[in-house]
Image (tube, rainbow, N blue to C red; front, side, top):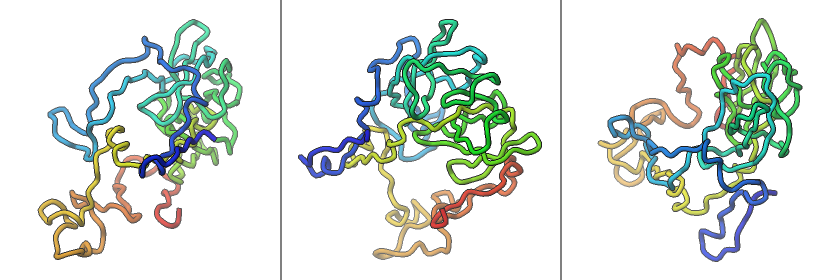
Amino acid sequence: MAIKTFKPTTKSRRHISVVNYKSLLTQNKPLKSLTFGRKRAVGRNNVGRITVRHKGGGHKRLFREVDFDYKKIGIPYKIKSVEYDPNRSGLIGLAVYKDGEKKYVLLPKNVKIGEDLMTGENAEAKIGNRLPLKLIPVGTFVYNVELKPFNGAKIARSAGNFVQIIAKDAGYVDLKMPSSEVRKVKEDCFASIGEVSNEEKRLENYGKAGKSRWKGIRPTVRGTAMNPVDHPHGGGEGRQGRGRRRAISLWGKPTGKGQKSRRSKKYSNKYIVSRRKVGKQR
């Protein structure tokens, strides 16, 4: 068990639990040539206006160049280290290719240091290897899945996440997403076999409000606690209901409680075989 708890020396310390990275990592400092500094947007757009609420502050982060394109096809590489990345929940590892090039990659669960992995149609169907979906057996768990061929990994990149291949037909592969949605993707899209590492990350408990601030997460205020000028749910004497049938956001769009918010004419609707299950059904 990689989750670490603490003696209750304070009220918040009683509830804090963290992933014990000491038992998982093999390297403390990242490779300097694959890191860069950058000012985080913290929810602001190019003119400084807040476009995403509840973001700001947080600890300074060093960015790692993680390879999600996997353009080096057919060249084997070895995993030389297991490292922490403050910008994602899964663990990353240093991949050293046979031609000497080094890249950071997102690691799967149960990968070992020194393991030989490869991207390409000739790769063996084993954990960590990356193949086109048409060559991966039905029922296999995959991560780092492309939505368009050679467009880079987009799906299932968070700690413990995976996508399941459930069917193949007419040049498309049916994938069961982490959200429970079933979606068609072209069979030429690449995916890595396995599940994303650090699956116990979801068991972490921040324990106190201050830890959210360290992460760059600002407080969220309920709409019902606001004034009518600030939110559609605001106002009323004392505690009031929202005064409308459906919960809506600050901008009047349906939100929460399992309400459907997907656009009826979205371009990708034709690829959805089964919509995700929300609320109590899930």
